[in-house]
Image: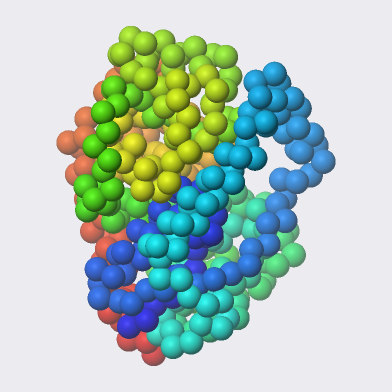
Length: 360
């Protein structure tokens, strides 16, 4: 069975690319022939209002930020190439979603595929997709709120196309709420991110570099984040007390001991072998949980994602605790892994039912 995948696999972001890879590999495990469908994204972000752009510009005028800006062009060029090389080697890349032939089914998800705050992309709801059987796996509405959805100019079109889908699953409770309230999707199933579902067990061995690094802590946070003096002081103190080198993975943080412009394979290796992880991203949190790592998390404007996943595995308090408290309290993975396995079963059963189900 040929199944197309529509997700943000072209983003220059380790989490986006690796969750797409995980979806592909899960479909293979279920006996399907997956193909990544191409797309052209509209990234007309609602966050581009003048006031918000001005705040970002001011933040990037700080002395350290000016240094980072000089480093970014070469860094980004290298990062784009590494992720593009990974996609070319590891993905079954197909034609445009509207042109790919012979599709039996199309999976839309995971990640923020339903989000229109960062640009309206109607193909992510199934519009003009060249297949009659479309289903969603762990889809997310992202920053979309009730208020935003109520007044959105494309609201009716979004609802109409989502209602045409054969089955729906969502990644977070906000998305579940919106699907049920506006699309009547009371049978939608909550599912975990493909990263957590797949687990990367083989890749953690195959992609290992067996490097001789000293014990280290991974910082996984976008450039210009995780840069307040207080955050830096607390993290450095903890790393010093534990004898850990501080390694920023994927992004530039000049206060770290080392910045690694990692390929997706190197990303997996660095997370797998880290002695501790500090992150403020969703996929940084998901990989930490999937690899059973001790980690601390800073929740910013992405609470709808991070708090949701932490709560689902029994670590809600960690989303509210300051870094100092998290550093003092180790995670008991006996309970966490039990919760993850329950979530895996529900998610796997849903995905299996869609792959095995009738195309009618």
